[in-house]
Length: 290
Image (cartoon, rainbow, N blue to C red; front, side, top):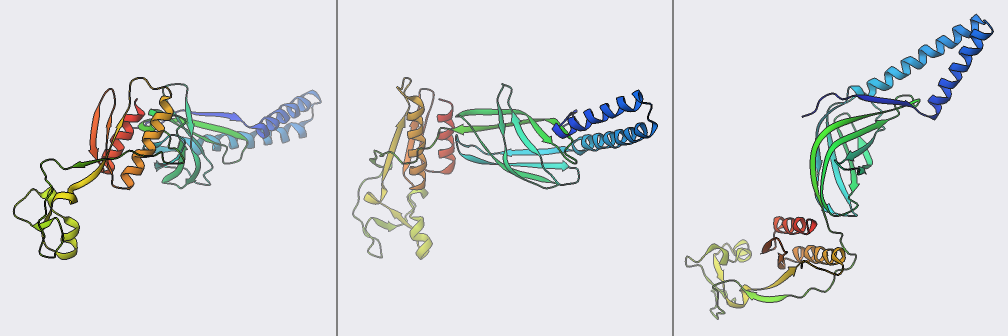
C-alpha cells in the first residue's frame, strides 16, 4: 500500500545559527588567509553534513504498515494506532498529523512510540465523514539541528458523530408490544407470571435469562413483552440543527446503555428500532451525515 516518499529537511533555529556561523568563519578564513581557521571551518562543515545525512536517514527508513481509526463523537479524544513495518532506531520524538484532500489537518497527541507501533489520540473538530490521504511524520532527531518531515500515503476514513451534551435531555418513551403477542395470564411451573413452558414458539420469545439461571426453556408472555421505545426524528429544516443532532446523539447513547429500544428517521433513511451496538453505530453514523 505504501511506497518510499521524499524526505524534506529544513534547519531549526539552532541549525540556522550554526550554518550562519560556518559561513562567517569561512569568509573570515578566506579573507584573512587563515589556514588554521579554514581547516577548523571545514571540519565543522563536515560534521554538519554528517548530521544532515543522519537526519535524513532517521525518516528515510520509515515504512508504514497500517493505520487504525475509530468512529467517535466530535470534540472527544479518540484512539489512533499506527503500525510500522520498519522504523529507525530511537528515541522516537515524532509529531504526527493526518491530512485530508481539503486544506484541513488533524494533529495526533500525545503519542507513545515504539519501533513497531505508535499510539495516540485525535479530536475531530466537527461532525461528518473524514477521509485521510496522507500521514505526515515530523522529527528533529537525532541532533535537533534540522527539522525533517515525510508524507506517507494512506487510505483511511472515519465518521465523526455529533457532539455529546454533558447532561442527557429528557427522553419521551412509548410503550409497545412485540408484534403478534397478546397479554396473557399463564403461570409457569415456578409460579412466575407470564412465563410458560416452551412449546415450539419462536426463539425470540424464549426467556434466556431464566434459561441461564435454571436451564429450563420457558417463553415470555404478555406484560413481560412490553418495552419502552424511543423514536427519534430529524426534520429537513431545524432552527439549530447542530444542537438538535447533539441532543439526539446524547439520548441515543443513553438509550443503548439502558437497553431501551430506539429508532431513527431522517429525510434520507429510517433505521430501527433496536438496542445493539451496531444499531447505535449505524444511527450515529447517519446523524453525522445529516
